[in-house]
Length: 106
Image (cartoon, rainbow, N blue to C red):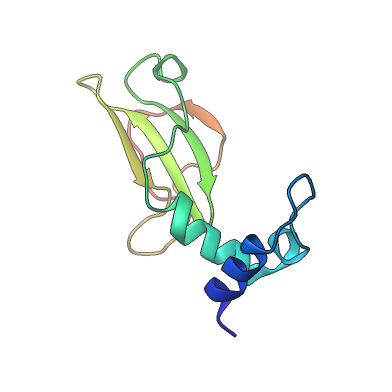
């Protein structure tokens, strides 16, 4: 099945003022394509700098299949990383937000 062409066909046939067809809400392939074509391509707003008030402050979010952690470093710069350790793949920050001197794998 060619999900992209199916999606385009349904969008072109959509009646104005009506909701999208069911696959847009329930089909995992539509969701995957939506994530790839829209959400994974551009910068996303996932937090405000006031949510990271001091060095070591962090917040975590899930963007599609990817867990992400935003952390303010010792110089005050905000960085984003995959929220998983490189050698075991386990989640580094389990809490939604917090403060840590260092981010280390559990």
